[in-house]
Length: 480
Image (cartoon, rainbow, N blue to C red; front, side, top):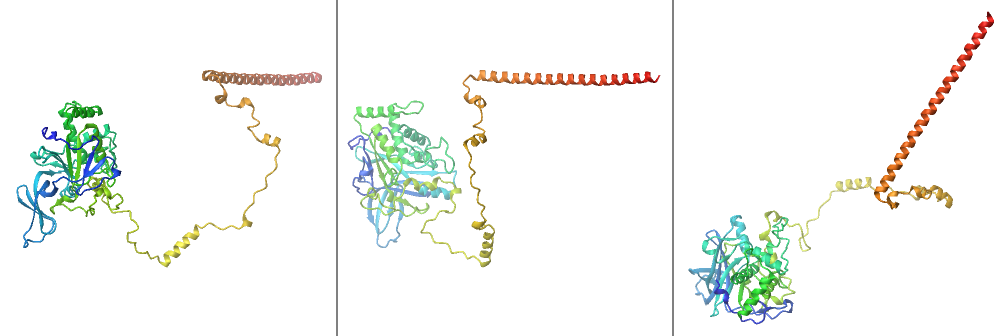
């Protein structure tokens, strides 16, 4: 692996990312320093099929071409396995292509049903990262598939297939260091995203995972990765300096079954991620897309019809309405079954529903119900007019205004008193005690006055009784 990572680059400049399409494409100023160029001399095909009940991916390299015998069945889009790792592919007409397998991997997804696995496998983006040897031959290093649900079924596939979820975490770690936002609405898988799941959807794209794997391998080779598995921007700059000191310009090729996201036609973060990573580390990448060279053998559901490819290249189709977002194509693979409901949004091109017929009885009853809740009409003569305003002088207004007659002492001490709170509390307590003592003294005075009046009344009654007794005594004496 380390020997294969020493491929030399023939691209001058440190801040260059190349995206290569199937046809020559002129430079587009909207892409900045992303330079479109021609495809390499090889033609890559991605063969998706189900083999022994499991999804299988074969990376095929075109090694020859020919024509079928005239009496051969005119079946289009056919592929035959001539022998081990050798296939004959026919798209249309008598021309055939001889393809050789340069990489294969079988997947498994034990948590999903077979029908869902087939559907997801057809929508997944596949690809690999390769390097050129001294003879210019392309050597496949690692294969990958978007997402983290598919795992290799065979033990021999684990060393050639990038499947571990740790690469998704490392992609998010690199993106955080490079200040690239990977958050999307699909991170929660139809649920509320947790802090750990933020960025998982975009981090599962193979462009990010494969480039992260290559850079991480260089960091580990030069001893720039510590035991905590955390990498800083300083470590990336140190890798760039080490490569410059040794005079090395490593160059790798990313071959994908779909065009990368991050271009004017397909918004996303893959191209900016790879571009920024290349600028910081000095490890150069070129991205090659083979969207028209995906082969399905029939055991995998076919994708929807692809758009027509122009000879000028997809970079010139900025205003084309048929282009689509590469990230949006994988939405169905990340949505749960509960979201697969009937469409509730329709546009103006949908067929209009038939007009509903309302019976006469229903219309009459509806009119009667409306009459019950209709607002009653009132004539002008029935409206009671308000009395004219009564003139009031300023003195009368001051007498009627209770706030104007209030004295300054009645204002709240809470808002106007500038004394400390403790002093105000003591003043209030003292005032309450004074009022309490005054009430007690008043009660004592009233009791004393009542007692005095009672004594006076009693003495008066006794005096009257004594007078009567005296008069009776005198009268009795006179009778004698």
